[in-house]
Image (cartoon, rainbow, N blue to C red; front, side):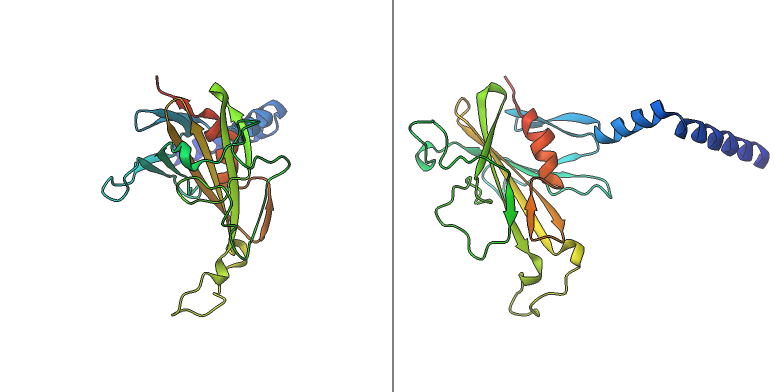
Amino acid sequence: MQHKSHLALTLAFICQIAVSQNPASQAQRSAAQATPKLKWVELDGKYKIQVPADFTLGRIDPKITSVPAFYFNASPPDYTSIQVEVLPYDPGGIPMNKVTGKLVPPANGDLTCEVESLPDPTALTAQGGTPPLTRYFTIADNRDVYYGCTVTDNAYECSMNSPCPLPVRRESRYTTEYAFAVFDRETRLIVELTGSHDGPSKKITGFKGDGRLLHDTIVPSLTRIK
């Protein structure tokens, strides 16, 4: 029995070496790692999105929130902070540019996230009170996605009963929170998606962590359920 087990392990090791020496196999493996398997999940029977296949969908108790709100779990080490809310569309509370038909203010250029001393009270945010929405792009059905980010210095998230600054780890001192909001006029709903990334920098350009997954994969997949 032990001899058979040893032989099986030896053959597996030889096969692994052969595969690792095959450039085509390396390319295929790299492509598979870069493109994770995806699956569709439904949001309150109104929308569906694509998420990594190992994500499990949970719903926040309706007793806690008056709107459909969802969160995702993932097996370690691929933890996730992604949450989704399906909110009522309130055109009266959304400033619009009469010339472009876009929300105010749309902006161009790279997204930059950094620690701010005080939030801008005039900045546009979705109804969940998330980070200010300062950029936009367009997805299927000609729907605009508005997005933005903020950075929090976790060392100064102190309370009256804790020392300040807090002794946080350097690699997770700053949390960058990303928010994406799809204002869907046809369904009269707003789909708001949030995610975050922990790191050592107080200034981030572009998308990291869950922000990248939302921007590159999940948000563009948002589809109405007819």
